[in-house]
Amino acid sequence: MTIDPIQLMLILFTFLIASLAQSAVTRAYNTFLQIPNSRSMTGAEAADRFLRENGIHDVSIEPTRGTLTDHYDPRSKVIKLSRDVYYGNSIASVSIATHEVGHAIQHAVRYPMLVFRNLMVPVTQISSSLSWILIFAGLILGFLDLALVGLVLFGVVALFQLVTLPVEFNASSRALAFLGNGVLNEEDLPGAKRVLNAAAMTYVAALVTSLLTILRFVLLIFGNSRRR
Image (tube, rainbow, N blue to C red):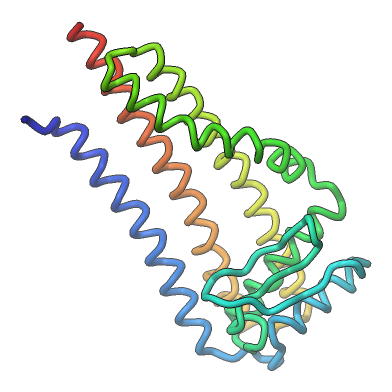
């Protein structure tokens, strides 16, 4: 059985992009987790102040287990921060905490791209589950139309990741504007930007890897079509 060199190259390139993005965010997080911010402000304190300054009083802040498990839950209106972020007073802690507040603010003001993204969630979950099954079933059984349907469904996943990008960048922009408005000293801001930019790149990498996966399947499907 021969291995298509183009497929192999795409697989390796996909793995490389994902690995580099994850390495960058882990390295930035670990670096600036060790550097206290100039105000000795914890992530929870920064998040609470950011919420209050935006007139949001119905969102709670809670610690949660794990590392880089920070997220905003719009259903329960809870910002969940990993313990290092919640209790820590590092540059990384306040950067990540205020990024999650950025999502809470987006929810409160009905930021259009977030609304659109949330509407896509149920469709994306179904598409993600079915796409791989239909693609592989179509390829194995020789039903290329079925594989194409799966490919379209996988395209929905890529579209969801594309819509996610402005949501994440906007949350980071809100966080940096808040931190730069006298909350942190000037010497802290480059570190905050590095943490937030590295985190954003993971979403860019996710989109790129999905697009490369689509390309791989396009080559497989149409390659099989030509051989028939």
